[in-house]
Image (cartoon, rainbow, N blue to C red; front, side, top):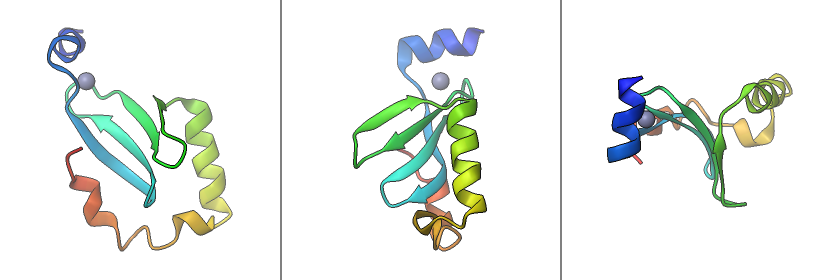
Length: 81
Ligand SMILES: [Zn+2]
């Protein structure tokens, strides 16, 4: 609860937690653990919810072309936004 107040005042401590493609990623706040889906191509930044989670799980199961080379880009997972 207190962490959410700190985030409201000072802003979130964003960290890329998962990279789906060069322009699509999941961003998490290290402080309050909130998550967002970020897409540069359509300038989207929305709260990560169950719907978004299941969509990406579905794309993963299809071996979605945008998910290719994700392992190779794993280093980006620790990058600070
Ligand atoms: Zn936060």
